[in-house]
Length: 216
Ligand SMILES: C[S@@+](CC[C@H](N)C(=O)[O-])C[C@H]1O[C@@H](n2cnc3c(N)ncnc32)[C@H](O)[C@@H]1O
Image 1 (cartoon, rainbow, N blue to C red):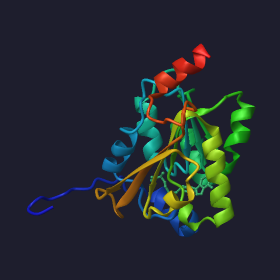
Image 2 (image 1 turned 60 degrees about the horizontal axis):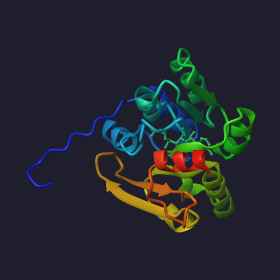
Image 3 (image 1 turned 60 degrees about the vertical axis):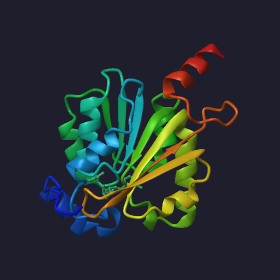
């Protein structure tokens, strides 16, 4: 942007940096997402409609805090974080919020966790895990599970340095990407949408798809 200065705000986190030094491939970044990226990702969620949101790889919780701040009192947020130190810190941060559940486990265990909690499906799944380093079979299996765990019309939102996941995610009916520069490094934000099951159309809002399910 010529003549324009772009300021990118990060919360410099000692914990984040320490965990990166411990497990560089799993954490995959030395700083958390920027404030601008967090807001852009949250803007893609319809908080009036969302009742169940899952997040893969919340890290120190920069997206989780914004999602929890915007979500309804009757919405649940399931946080899947592999790293034990991050999980402990998330537990501490959300101790007073019964809507938020911290699960110190692999995102691949989402279906199990939904069954355990008698939750039918998620309206949104947000992911910050480094998909690009997963082996192809694990990547495809996680994508399939993610698709299956979403309600009709539900959305899977990812932010990634590369957009390579798009080629593996053909099970979704629609995908829309943007290249977001206000983060270091810049990220692709992609929203994958699951069909609402009616003639393969996927453009209806969650409200419309819920209403049609209720009338069925
Ligand atoms: C790049 S960091 C993103 C952190 C945070 N979401 C952000 O935007 O600043 C990736 C996070 O995903 C976690 N992670 C990696 N693979 C995972 C998996 N399979 N299941 C759950 N968490 C995972 C890592 O431990 C790390 O906290």
